[in-house]
Length: 316
Image: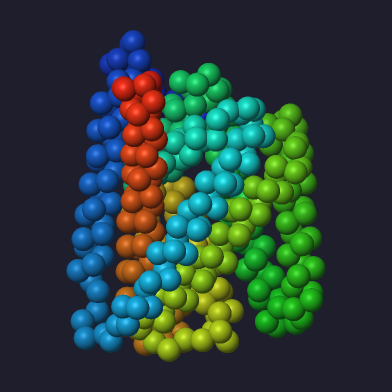
C-alpha cells in the first residue's frame, strides 16, 4: 500500500522536476492552493443554493457548532503531533501545525494524493524522508477509519445487546488497532505505544465531537434532545466512514457524506431537515477548515515577521 502511494505521489513530482529542475517554486504550490480554494468556493456556493426554502431556522442553535468544530480541528492537530513524534523525531510543534494547515489548503483537489504530496513536500524541505511522511499519513487515515468503525460497531451492540458489552468491544477494538499499528507501521521500527495511544485518543475523540456538532445543527431545525444523541452518532459515523471511502479517489468531489446524511436524517426527521443539515455540515467543515488553516498560517507568518523582519522560509 505504501509503495503504491509513493508511486502515485512521485508522478506529479517527476513532471514538476522535468519543468523545474532546480526545485519546485513557491508560486506553483500557491497556484495549487488557489485552485483548491476555488473548487471549495464553487462547491460551497452551489451547496448553499440548494438550501431548502421556508424551513424554520433557530440561528442561536448554531452558536455551539463553531466552538465544537474548532475543538475537533484542534484534536486532529494534536493527533498529528503524536504521530509526528513517532515518525519524525524531535521537531518543533509549530512545524507540524504549519504542515497540516498548509496541506489543508490543497485538500479540495481531486484525490487525497495532493494532500499527502503537499505534506511530503513540506517535510522534505526539513530533511524528513517522503516514505516516513506517507506512512504517517496512512497511519492517520487508519486511526480515523479504524476508530470510527470500532465506535459504530460498539454503538450498534450497545443498542441491541448491552452497553457494557459495547464498552468491552470498543476497548478490545482499540487495543488491537494500536497493537497492529505499533507492530507493523514502518516495518516495526516505530512502536512507541504511548504516542500511538495518544494519537488514537485525539483522532478517535473527534468522532463524538462531530456527532455533537451534528446534534447542534439539527437543533437549529427541529427539537432534538439528549435521547436523540445515539441516533445522531449513528448517522454521523456512517456518513463519515462513507466520506473517507470516497475521499481516497474523489477527494473534495465526493458527496458521500452529504448523500448519506440526507438519507439517514430523513429516516427520522423531514427530508428538508436532512437536506439542510447536510448542507450546513458541508459549509461548516469546508469553511471551518479553510478559515482555521488560514488563521494558523497567518499567525505563523506574523510571528516570523515580528521576530526577524522577513519570513525565514516558505510556509508551504
